[in-house]
Length: 392
Ligand SMILES: [Zn+2]
Image (cartoon, rainbow, N blue to C red; front, top):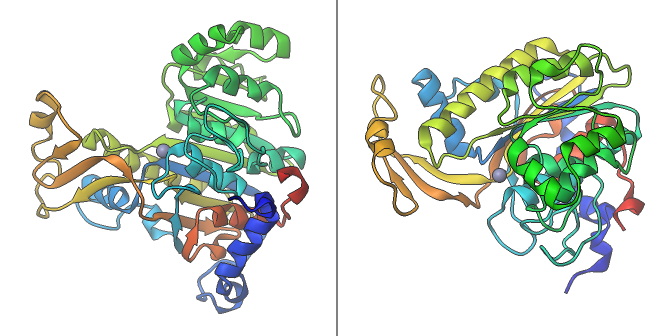
């Protein structure tokens, strides 16, 4: 059933590249005069809006600014549409979606950075090497930040390998046993209570991990002393705005560059929360953009999968979310949220999500492509070749 050869990333990457031959060849010379020099990135920041599809980004501009296309990311010069499916279905979860982006290998829903030979909850697949691992191997500083549990599928796909996204008790400890380099340098996320419970069930704890590996695991950003160059915070929530700026203070010291992944939840099962999250994320991204040098830094925004939100009504000057308060107060039943101007089918959806990019190496982001191509974009921005052997 499975072509064994295609478990090799090289094979997948080659197939990906040949499916979109025009990209690499034409972008550098035929780009618009305003485009930046194609280039080499020293640093890459991947902004991941979890479930932040095209319609959610559109709604965020309407909610935040009362007009379409007012977000900062909507001003970026490079746009592509990234296809998110797992190998055996049309609709992706966060585990497959993020694993595909950071390893260049599509897999199955529920599986964290292992190949499609994994069987969820039953059998490990081939570990697939992540961008964070490549960066660690080459001596860059690395960071992972999330509004969500730091052991949940999206952040986990950057630093862990597991056949089941639910096994937080064995996923989180992988922070301390990296396969390459010294592992994640800066980690700020949420999920403390539930990760803590699962660590205990797995025979360990935050305290034990801290002691054995001589790395404190703080519960708030404020507890991190200025002297700690490799801080880990697992809180019961996370101010991702403050966390990202704090992480940049550390990562921007790196002589060899850095790789930073920032995830912000954008599920719109609660439409106001989800859409406002994207408005806030965009403001953070604008702030980060002002702090980096786009000549040596690639900024990439995408989503792991889309979501069933539609703006199907509304008038300029009137509230987009009319009826939200009444909906919020009412008892919930079924998967459909019906506001006056917004319809949400509370589920992930299969259509492509945006990939938006600016800075060094951004010119490769254009056209329709599978999400695994974004791995290629980032590796090429750094000027690195994938190491096929480790995918065996
Ligand atoms: Zn997701």
